[in-house]
Image 1 (cartoon, rainbow, N blue to C red):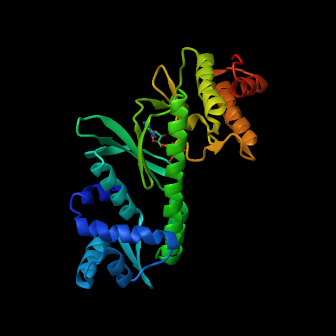
Image 2 (cartoon, rainbow, N blue to C red):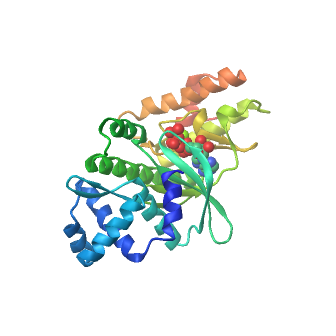
Image 3 (cartoon, protein in one colour):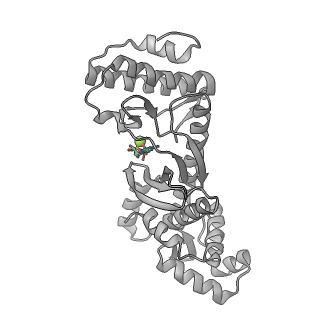
Length: 295
Ligand SMILES: Nc1ncnc2c1ncn2[C@@H]1O[C@H](COP(=O)(O)OP(=O)(O)OP(=O)(O)O)[C@@H](O)[C@H]1O
Ligand SMILES: [Mg+2]
């Protein structure tokens, strides 16, 4: 079971006081330290016996860990906080299956109470480096845990920002609904990853559609994806959706032109190899960056 599934099962069992302790530990992420029980007593206003009881429970559930100098929040703990917040806000009411496991994220189906399906993406930046650290030292250090969890929260913020902006200028991206901590709730695209698509009626049109989204993002929203490839495009048989925007950059940032050229080249290379479409880079670059230019 993934950490998010563990958290989803536990969200129902957690009580208001458990959350108060989790929030106190979440606050401590900012100082990258393990915290003592008396810090939690101060922040929550709960009696020391109560805090001890809650910490014991949360540790058993795997949401909180104990290091040499105190307690700290782990990935499942942050999952529980994010899930609970989305439930409270009325966005989701049940947790479904795994949609995809990427390098840096776990993606799940979720439903709201009207049966509407969305996907929920939890960031897992540092997961692989973490495993190595754990193997070497057996225990995760609170500082490292905090650094990675903060990086996950920042990635989710960045993706939320990019998805909303690109969607608002009519780029083909999943519609953004909400972000809580390191989790992003978005429209579910019923499509196939482009790298697995073996036949296209009109590959040239596919190229055009994808570059049209890059153009909208660049010209109208001043955003560059920065990690574009056939692995981050979903095709539903008609439309091409560009997903996975946590590394998006502003078009005016220092290495933006390098990133944009790389994005364009990745797509051109894929279409050339897989579908035999030869489209010149200069023309594609001009189409993406110059308003009103034609494909
Ligand atoms: N909005 C969505 N609708 C449907 N499926 C999605 C959606 N977003 C993500 N997925 C699925 O989850 C997988 C992983 O998502 P995504 O590429 O955003 O995460 P990732 O972990 O950053 O991936 P990687 O780092 O490996 O590129 C996708 O390949 C896709 O199969
Ligand atoms: Mg991806």
